[in-house]
Length: 364
Image: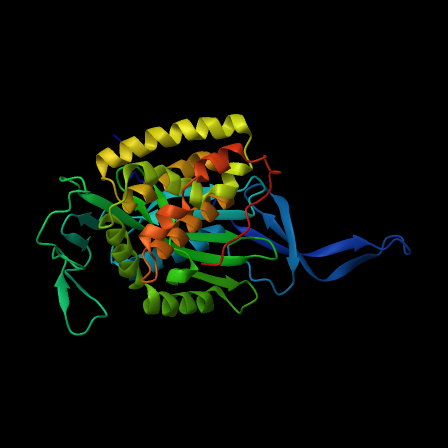
């Protein structure tokens, strides 16, 4: 059985990550006039005051958002959306300290799926109003579909919990945008999935704006408009659960989602991944059942072994979200899809290894 539960430990703020930043103009010595110092136009240097060293050079009108300020923005937005105080689940900073991201999560809010449907629970609010007419749902009432008959392809005692998380990514360099994304972590095994642009759960803002307050205003408006689409994503998760698939097809779906990522690996690495995929499939079928939800969890779990870099992992998560949208769409035909999977394992395992390269971003 999969048993690597999500932990909710308090993570203290580290000055080495939430350091102050000083801005200074770019100076240089005039080669033609000894002793004369000039200023390079339209540029400034950013200095990490914790290390007392320069870390990047940006355009003069670049808005510097310190990592600590980005973190606090994420905390305020999480509290606005879910009415509970978040904790740091994961925090990342690049070696040169210019790239930073943090995943915020709370034990006090979660979605729960089982045979009957799905529900949202939160310590911070007693009721949720959904955009489906005048109906209102108390916290512990089920939202979504309810079944009278049990689904034999779902594990009978399944009670699956997913915690929403907010990831904010901040950069102290040009050519990037401050990014805020919503996603889910599965409670039992920490499988993560970013919901992507198709679900409108990603907000991006360039740094060429007046101040951080203007970014926060735009983010608040954006997520006030779209955050209820998380319920649509959870409806899709439940639809995956309600869709039975043959046991021998489940692992093939991971090859389908990550085919090009497999083929960038050597034959030896692919064989190791293949063995691990067999084990994961057996574990998740035992825990969840023989359905598309188990297939998604197999894929997101294996993605931890496919790529370890932060950026690459994010893109694998979005690929899984793209697959989820595809197989839960009204136009999807399960029979045709299962037929298309024939021979995919042999094709992936026998393909000539391609050159390793960064995964192209996917517009969801």
